[in-house]
Length: 187
Image (cartoon, rainbow, N blue to C red):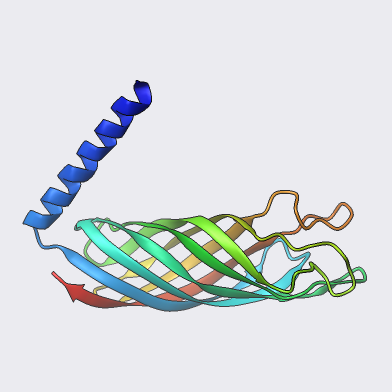
């Protein structure tokens, strides 16, 4: 019964948000951009480069929700005799953004699942299977105006204990910088 009440409350909040968004200037956009980063921790990978695509709806002038995806390529590196393979991350997640002012500082995150693609093995000289993916998070903080966003990000796929070689964890994550261009879809 408690879950039912929470579901009703959530549906009511979403309905109010959608109705108020419909009555005010609604702003829908596609965000297309790129990012580069340094792998953290750097046991398995050295660097990353990626592209981002997202749909965002400004529910209120200062709060946006949407969906996000893209592709980030991580470059494998040799570590103590282990020749780590490259891996790609294809995230599918929810986009959440908070814009305190019409232009200037903003912050937010993407939350979802990150699919790992590429070679099926963690390393070229190992028989350990690479994980298929895991919980994905990408918090970011940056500067925005009507057309552009410039940001600093942390991107991570939590794979649990899958892909470990010995006592070394399999980590897919980076700290980086990026940009996105906003393509308006209408008001």
